[in-house]
Image (cartoon, rainbow, N blue to C red):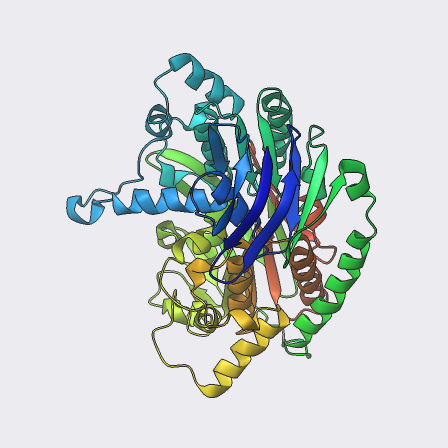
Length: 472
């Protein structure tokens, strides 16, 4: 495969590739958020039209697995939801129905179900799946098309450790009969079959490397140092004095239990977040981590059937949900998926001050200046007036992080906050979160599946497993 004289124009960036010979090799593609990585993948998959250029010897069929495609499937499922009329809660098509919509070959479906570990999920509706479970389904749907070119845009995002390892093994097997183009921001996500690396910058295709040349590239250390400098500026935007510590716990749940349709997700959870504590929550896909975060925020309906206190308010005691939300900052895949409204980038950041999805009231001039300050700290001030939907997934996630931090919350709920971020911005965010935790600027509840994303200042852990949970 060879890409020639390519010119792609997105809403806020352009991508140019004069000549790139991928031969039959397996490639990884690195680049900053907004550099056009995902745009290139969508063009190769036939989802985007180029201003000029062509590709020679394109292996077909081509399949794309991406967070954006996952979001599109969710929106399609929501469009078909008529629960408002039927009064019956719907969860979308089941995993089995979605698989059979792509293939009528029972043998192939059985093979792919095993490869992607979907057997326990076949009767689940798409909207019941966790982020990691949805990622495995999206890969399975692509594999059912028997692609000769498989485009994988951040395929490890949202997967627990066990399924990350399973995917690494699976890609080695898939690579024997299919060319891979892996779009990623993490060196540790390079399967052994990846032999070459390409780097995109604002000008387009910058350089290509052999695998070993990339891993020995000194620029990676320079990016880490730059990220630490930017993180320092980011945290200086927050208050410099540590807030007064309240005496009561910020959150507590007693004998917590969540179930769906008679199937228990977890039960018997006794947990509280005391003043000064920062917690990391870990566990396999589907164990209840994101559910727990939504119990804290009040976005889960079963928060009122549990014995829960948040920031001094007991759930179900007549408290205003807005009294609690004004003290919470939230970043999650669920929020990202819900943020489907039409609004500008600056309005996304401003919405954090009003705890809304979208902006529905006029912001004051000081509030607008504050939002622009946050955009500037993230290097996104030029994007302020662009529509949220037209930005890359990584840029959208950065805006949601700024949305959570702008009001300087007492409790920051972070469910895989670095998902979709490029190397530089991931290091900026992680360094900023470490400074926030270390200086007690606010307290964190932090979910991640990546060991390299763990924060040294987070010393308390809640670990879910198949057999229950453990507090450390």
